Length: 209
Ligand SMILES: Cc1ncc(COP(=O)(O)OP(=O)(O)O)c(N)n1
Ligand SMILES: Cc1nc(C(=O)O)sc1CCOP(=O)(O)O
Ligand SMILES: [Mg+2]
Image (cartoon, rainbow, N blue to C red; front, side, top):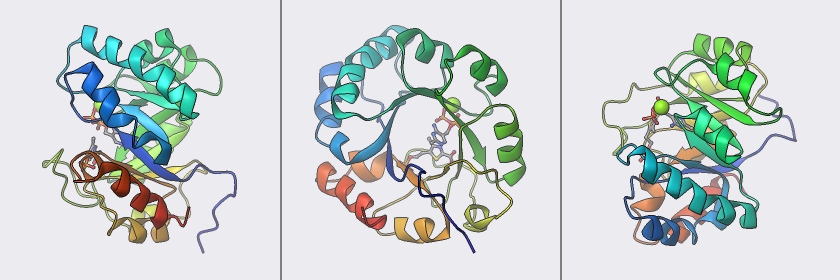
């Protein structure tokens, strides 16, 4: 039995592509944003100045659409710019430091990869959601560890939203939702699609939203 609290966020957790041009980034994000529950700003190639400028540009768009904006890797930048959250992986610093420094209610996500023990540690340190993956081979991160759906079904996981990531397509999303994913986190399945807005809508449909 996998009873899901009714107040948990659900749907598409969209991550931005490594787009170097800020105007182009906005042009790519704007049409898909109405279908996203959360947006994560992630750019692994841009320097600090570009990342800051891109976040400053994305914030009003997200505010206008009512979509929380979460910053990958850098909780200090998230706090400084007043973003809605930060997402930290194993190389991104201590969750407890981020939780202590960020305003109450700020979203704080933790990459837990393929291990439920990471999720317990993360929530103990202040994470407000947990992410597992990769569930399928990821075009964006081909070397990602592979996670199994049993993780999402684990009844002993802490009671916070469960995010699935890695190679998720509109077609394979339903099996993760059925296993217990509250959100599916996606880059290439939306931004490399021929019709990104249609693809984003299709993920929502996997949740019957
Ligand atoms: C929702 C979500 N889940 C996992 C990740 C991966 O974080 P990390 O392992 O730190 O890798 P990078 O994204 O920084 O390359 C994520 N960003 N978001
Ligand atoms: C950023 C990231 N983290 C992963 C993990 O397993 O922790 S997989 C991944 C890439 C997600 O992109 P796509 O939707 O294109 O596969
Ligand atoms: Mg990271």
